[in-house]
Image 1: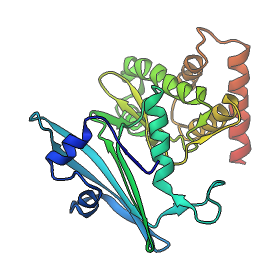
Image 2: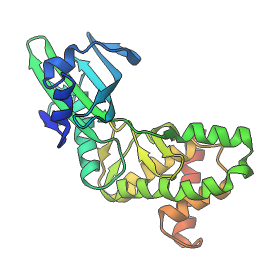
Image 3: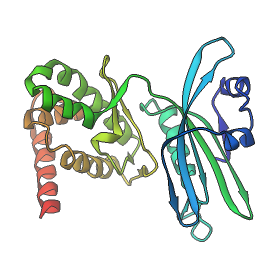
Length: 257
């Protein structure tokens, strides 16, 4: 993928004087978080508010990087921009109905000085990371948020199951990488740079559920079981649920030793 723009977004960008790669690259804006400097290159993200031709508003996260690359089996020597893999992953999930930020723009340029890459996604409005919600539940009283947890947990399980049905593993499935829409309970996956294809769905499942299980130690056993039931689409505990519960416990014990 050398260049991509989502339907309708070229007009929005042009309406804001950002209709070209150079205009986006040279845009002066405050960093949303400090740029990452490494190996003679840098990568940073800004939050940009845009006006639409119809008089509305949109917000995007504009990510720019220069000379940030990784080695892949297709590019063993020269490497490829790290954003290229993330853009490919976003497009894959967007096309297949797995909730993730909408990719609205991607473009890359290579010069004798190296890669310049731009990736833009539509802002997720009204979402909070799952780890912040868990922290709120603990501080305000776990039992007080029973109804909210019952609504959210099945939707987290659903989006992760859909990802694994594509034989893809997130590969960094921490609670901070699962965003929740507080009102509806809808779940969305973010930070997809490390997402990779696995040999089969089970490999993807164990890789991600092990990480999520170990990184959400504060969540009750009851809610963990409720998550596994929803993920496996079971109404009650059966042999498969017990087996997965046991396997995750073994993995947790092994990695904590």
